[in-house]
Length: 274
Image (cartoon, rainbow, N blue to C red; front, top):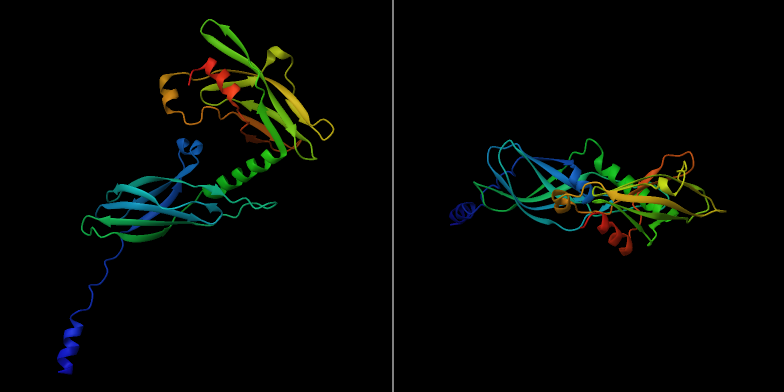
């Protein structure tokens, strides 16, 4: 009787678990991803059957990257599919460079032959150190924002010449630390160009030098239409991403985005309606 019982119990052993689909992952970034503050997880299916990704989550030391993202992404055999991933908030330790770890990708997937959802964990390649570079720049920009205040003055003068519109105003700068900083360059966004305003007088080089004894400077600027067409207007995500280069005298400047308030946005719509 005991032998029969043991034999019967042996027949109830669960089926062996099927191996996870063979997938590889790499972190990449396309041009459109930069303004959207995200990267792409390039997933390669090295197996022989189709894989469907149901959920994606990426965890990286140094980033607060949030929860899993629902997906419904088909990856055929021997193909690579990019899945966007918003990387979230970068952790910027005070006084030290950010510390970035490896990207651990967790997927929930199924295949044609096995519709059961399975969890797959992959350590993604990042051969170019992309995530570390993003973190360094993010923390550097945050540091510069604590050192110098940048905003456009609300008053803009509109100049019309035929169908062309140019607006003239000032970039207001203020030093927030006890060390000198220079403003070396300004540049426009995709829709709007931005240049120093030569009509207001000779352009200085650097554009402004801020010191503890002279912490405030106004830089004359002019804005104009760079690309004011239907395709650009329909595709652009951040039309007011102007750039201003700030740095220590003699050092390497960093491009940061100045504050753009409602009066400036209204004036820019005179240049190119958005």
